Length: 373
Picture 1 (spheres, rainbow, N blue to C red):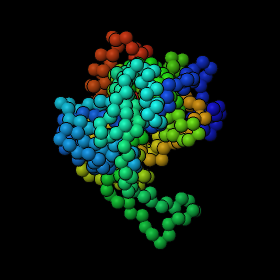
Picture 2: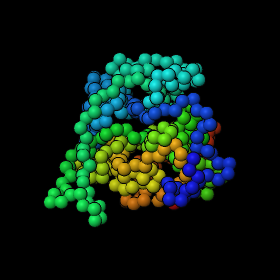
Picture 3: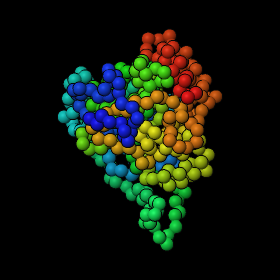
Picture 4: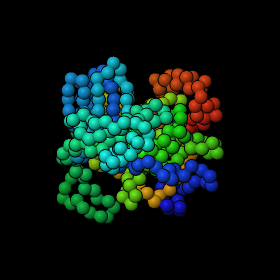
């Protein structure tokens, strides 16, 4: 593994005895994230937002909606009709069906066929936070669709566009694919190890609460281990907090102009921008965060870091100012400190503190420092 952090993704590496960020002998190594699953009471409203956000509809039925990007592969979001809006799980793609069977044998779970119109096999698990996790293989691929072509950009003195203007269309940014999901867990360390040991994922960056590095990390950005083939800086990110819950998901678009013009399109239709536009530090993505009509946070991103398996984890303090290299100050809505978010967060803290989990008073103090730092 690369052991120098000079000019790499982080100024600091691990200290002696800190978490290595990978399992020595994982059961399997997943290939990628496949899809996310939600229940929503109003699929018509959900589809209207999805189309404005840039999804294509892969399937529409009376009680189910499947959304896709322009890349070939499986749908990237499955919505089913339910009494209330809620996140119901993640699916990851294994290398092949043999890995699905290997994981099932190791965990004591059974291998089941997926619905005929998705194809393939699955093993259904639950992580230590209580999040349902499917691992799938052999699914039928949807065909590639046309995507937005990145605009030609004159960078400095390098001219690639002459006698031509730039006119980014004010239209939905065409989602290409699902990039990652972010979860919060009251059992962060146990859940982290579960993903590393069972799914073979590896950590790109650890964050620790201000003044609490000795207590261990409080957030991790986790990628797929594809060996020498580069993978997204994070396919899964996990943070310690007062509830086990979905935080946000991110969907790739072609470039900054698609992201910005797509944001203008969403804003004109009355949808709420949570935070953006900016560029992250961990992962380096250009980002723009929006709330769907049910309050779920979703992100357009472009130009993210790609790492192979040689890079070791970086370590950095978890601070609000450290979430972006540039862009507007991080919003209260994104941090959960807005009036609506603060009430929900306070209730989650009151429920979490009396229970046996990793989110104790010391960790609460660390979390409160994040928003102020």
